Image: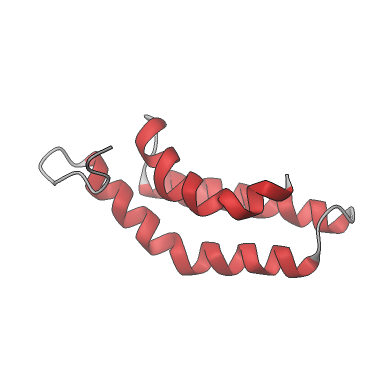
Length: 86
């Protein structure tokens, strides 16, 4: 769970877009909201520090537009692959 805090950008900004066939810009946003709720509950239960949660929220806020744009480009067959050569 604690490692997930450090892997969110790799997950939502790369793996999720490339490997989850249902990924859409809107779906990325709702998935990020679910992840925030999960980690908020972990703060409430004392499993993670509030500072780590705030860092997670900042990462989501700062990266959301980029993740959504990369997803839209990746899902458009006319656009170049933003993850090339993967």
